[in-house]
Length: 117
Image 1 (cartoon, rainbow, N blue to C red):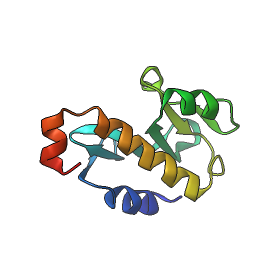
Image 2: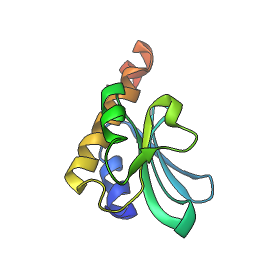
Image 3: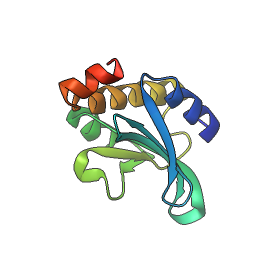
Image 4: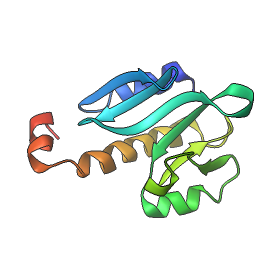
């Protein structure tokens, strides 16, 4: 998944906002809370995608080749796709949609109502 495809997909989810921060990282939020990031990180400066996971998904994904606990965010159950072929685009979309749902679900009832969630 390219960064443009990542941005297009995240932008199609309900009530999202997009910011560029941390040295050109594409950061997607719902209700002001981050659910997915695409940036060039680490050695080789390759594009990498990171997203919030459920506890079970985090445990399972971290066992797969090409997926690692996300730097600085692992304690909050985030993973980073370390290789371009770690997941198919369809799987990335499903996990990003789930990340959006998890983060939106932690917003206050009033904030969810305000955002139409």
